[in-house]
Length: 386
Image 1 (cartoon, rainbow, N blue to C red):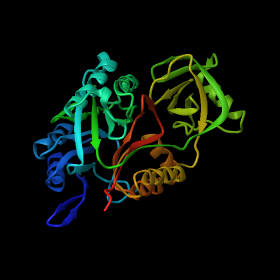
Image 2 (cartoon, rainbow, N blue to C red):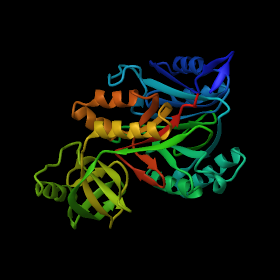
Image 3 (cartoon, rainbow, N blue to C red):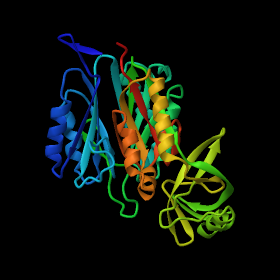
Image 4 (spheres, rainbow, N blue to C red):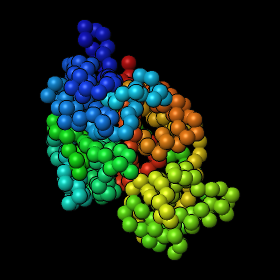
């Protein structure tokens, strides 16, 4: 806890603004975040806002600004209410309990593995240490990745492999895949595409890597026998969409269209790593991120989204000592579209709003070395003990 004249000051501060003038929004955020001891500002913005203006916030503040654009943000003042104007949210972290190292990985479409690996080493060097010496009790890595180039999975592998002892959490920028709108990440005052940012925090306060997946497995398994990037062409040697309809019918369920509520998962060491279904295109299935031919997938169905989210956030609060001072949340767009379809969008937003949460709706999420979907990934930071 920081003190000013004997008065305790918060270690984290949230800011929210909505409107169509990115310059004015940047001014509002700078006014609300400026203060002594600012170590870093996370800024997440609606994809319709000019990213270059928001990236330039670090010229107004005394600390680095990192962030990205997305199709929705977490941390509005009126949770669960559809906003009429584009919104931007921010989280500032303050005090000498925290040190920050940042590394940028550009040109991911050329060499995602090595560039993300190098970004971790640069972030560690900024802290005066090496990637191999990062301590899981003090350090955690946060990643922000441009999610439009099909190299996100290689970014996850390369970054987490560079510092295997610590946890990695993060999210990919999101947009309407049908429209192909541009998205950006930003750091060092620049808005970048085809890039990722690695932020390593060195914290004296307790923290917990949040992970929440509410999907549950069915008894159904299937093998990808033909695929191309995000598109599955065949399952079990048959056209993919008709085959999935047949499988679901065998357990009395159906394939929702155009936005399926079911998903797939790879199981590794008993843990499901989910691949969301984005849509159906004729006989093909379109996923949110790529899948390889030969993979064995379990068909997943929706479970208790609201209850699971509340439980996992409560667990995070317990792990950091009972009180969350700041929550960075990377929440998959498929969670939000599912909640909207089921009439529980306000309840999901309220579950996040029960904590000092700031974040964005992601296309995919990083959990350790793996890229996942339909997941809440994030970081809870505990309040200092009195």
